Image 1: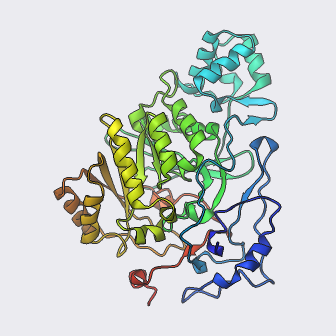
Image 2: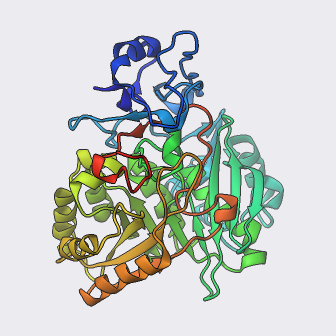
Image 3: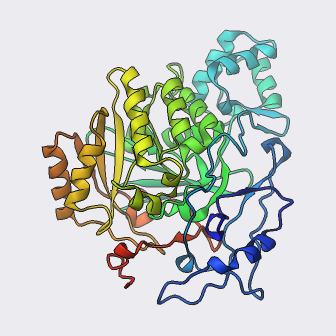
Length: 466
């Protein structure tokens, strides 16, 4: 294992981060035009702070990232092929997180919700009335005083044993194009971001986060610079959609679509993501159509298969490259689940789903993945997979090495795909002046995940020289 992987490792508290850093000091390299990497100077090395979580959060563990004295742009580390990536079945899950002795109701699906109400001596009908006040009837209640029409004893029980709110509003930013970015504070002091994207065609989308940070380290994504801080609970995921409707429906109209494309890799937090999606599509509650709830993944294949078997919601796969060489670099998860394995899995699994198309997302990076040859390879890669392709304009951010493909190149790429029989769309930036666009969410701070070594053939495209 090289130092470049330390940020991904789930390390128990008994391990000394400093000793790990000393062991792998020989792998540090530098970019021209940046100062020497300070990671291994003992006068400036500071192990990253430990994240302290309440005992109810489960096993205490952290993700190691580069220390606060390091410059993210100078951390260029190569990765071995056999790294043990996070697989979504280990680490922390927070399915039924409670606040103290109170149950967090938005973490329960309706069957559990009804069972909990009955366990306190109240009727199923009262559970339904409460459910509708949390999720429907344009109430979206956040506290007991907003629960109109419920009997006095029921409300008293709720005040003693239940918590209605999972998030606290920290800030609301509005971009010049009308996109809203909502910052939510969590109980442990961490912050997540949610985006609401209005559309002239009557469709408004809320983009929800599933983790604080992300362990995947996709090189073009700002959230990936954070490393993984923790998973979100199902309640914290659901509350983003509830809060968006409560806060903004009057301004932007009905919120009709949900995309799990905010902070985090949803399938790394598969338990809580499936649970949250199930709550969102409940007909008595938020009542989003399953076809309008889309969960995106970078390509965790076992969790992808589970999602297709257990959820009725839509699937998006972040592809972004047409060769393993490029995808290994810009999306390190490809070193565990190769392109051929990912696409063959989709080909096989979708045979058993009727009228179902996967959405392939393709972020256009100038000089990296936007050639005519890439477009032709992409046509061949997706053959036999019922799909749509979404070409996404790359959104620059601090420390990024990449540049967006220009509009002419994107149109040329689209036309080649269309001529090859693909259903293809183009998505241009929304909310980028408030860092609310695709790939711009989060706040990495001074402790950041490493940038990876750039393959020689792409150094000129990134203006790094040879």
